[in-house]
Image 1 (cartoon, helix red, strand yellow):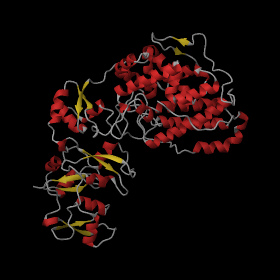
Image 2 (cartoon, rainbow, N blue to C red):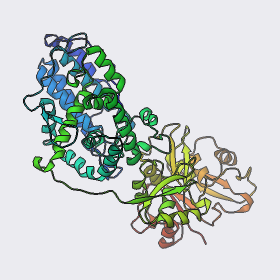
Image 3 (cartoon, rainbow, N blue to C red):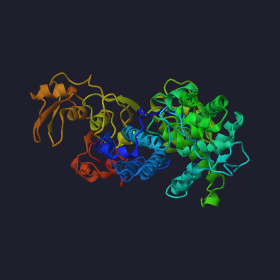
Image 4 (cartoon, one colour):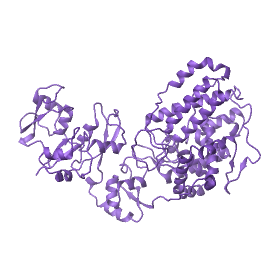
Length: 585
């Protein structure tokens, strides 16, 4: 990542004979941190996987098992077995780093990486590291043929037992993952090679992106590094990438590659060595400078760096060796290209659906062409913002967008979660469904909201903005209806349904905060009108067990008119909490 940080674990040499005496302390350390044993997660750096998947084993699960096996071996005094297990844990975590993960999972992985690194440092203490932080013995690089020239470029891959361990992994248990990385590589090679040529960088550095992210624009690590080049937010801003609530240009292949090329060129100019430059990219220039001064060596293989960084360069060399002749190692070469596109400049906010309509495509295509736009629309504060549309449609799209009425440009609302909010209430307030809100914000559960959280709300077909309570009657001066409370009802849900306030309902019915199933509530409307929307329709909330056929029959309308009113098909699925429009003539 660009760039990471080290872990604040104290360094005190421990020897194998002391291990059994430390057993209780080790078991406590192994159990803390909150890393779960079953975490729902997408497959490593999958670009075209669905947003939600069934729970199953993940790379983090595997890493956790290896970590516990390492602790058991450490407690038993088997240092070699412990090292192998902790190294395997680090390998699994390195592969998991390119997954797009939830914030809680990211924290768990960060804690686990720190623990494994801590034990590996303790093992290093027993294998020749001096207490002053410098190595007592240099790492043994295999001879002859330590420099293995696999391409005509300017970076030669080193082969030693560290590199071979990663080669063994990528040709063994990690073969499927590496094949996916190879399949994506050809999509981004033109962009990467062009940027590298402008900055005089060797093309072999594309394998740096491979091991950072697997060439996934959506890769998100537990250290909060994002995109193909795994930029941290501060570093990204330093190189001119925009990172805010609306836009994250770390996900843009062109802009992030240009920034990465500048960063790599500066690192090489400072260190004069690609191994040190890649290490600095991973852990930060300051950490590498510090270790060079402290240990008085510029040999990467002798520097005492965090375990993740010590693995980073060997993994790069392994990827370079395998990727330079993949068929010789049993991999297939499946070349593909990104869809061609052209840019359109916009001076106002347009969401993906409106843009897709104007471009004659769908929202998914617009999202794939514009990965930096993370809120489903162009930012509201950018004049002349460039968005990509399919090639050949730029001019016609520009004309159609210019003619688009202002109230049709954005079909989204931004909502800040407040104390007491529920997804069903939010969905009903904006005239949409719980399912739509969850899908738009990639929420895995309808119960996991936090105060202050920002949600993008897709507006309903008949709702341009949240309904206002300002027009609610102040007393029972108009027509009324009687509502029978059903199981699961709340006063806030009933108030939102009838476009009034909880305060009014309580006053009209002389009730407190508690209601019960079967209770009758009087709901008053202004001017004697029925409780319905201005379009002559009313809305009902789907409850457990409801079907579209049941709702149509119960409200005396045909199934076909109900489907048309809600833009649904015969095979559409509804779920509890969805808001269904009942058409009225």
